[in-house]
Image (cartoon, rainbow, N blue to C red):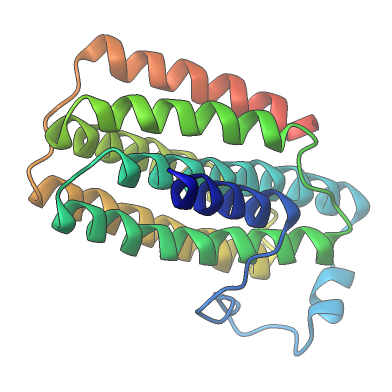
Length: 214
């Protein structure tokens, strides 16, 4: 129990303090463009920078939530294969967290002031999903990743066309989320009830709208 508490607290502190490092390099521009970050961002108007910053803050919140969800779900399973699947996906999400955090800094934007609340709520949801059993926990993962993929597709439509750096990050995140959902599906995920899926959508929409500003 002591080890569990230490590991859980360490992961939470790393996530909320920004003390994470990506294992993969930050994605490059989708198209040939500026040779430096500063040169690329100088092409953005203040309104475009503000929009990109708000959207990337929302994406950063999503990755804070992903860290909490995967950790809690991994705690809830006794199956080593299930835990390995969750931990592997979590490493990708750590990359996403570091990428979005770096991009926020480049845009002169801040992370959400409500990140501790998002983390705590997501950890609780992940723990409950884990307690329901592996097939339902996997189903929760599939639905979460499907919703995140749709959300990222919407951001690709909203990000300024000239913000190639943010667009490259979001595109890679979208590809990773789709892969996570597919892997969970193959591992035996159960389909969640319609009411549960709509409830998740409602909570996600409330979170994203709030994080856009806070």
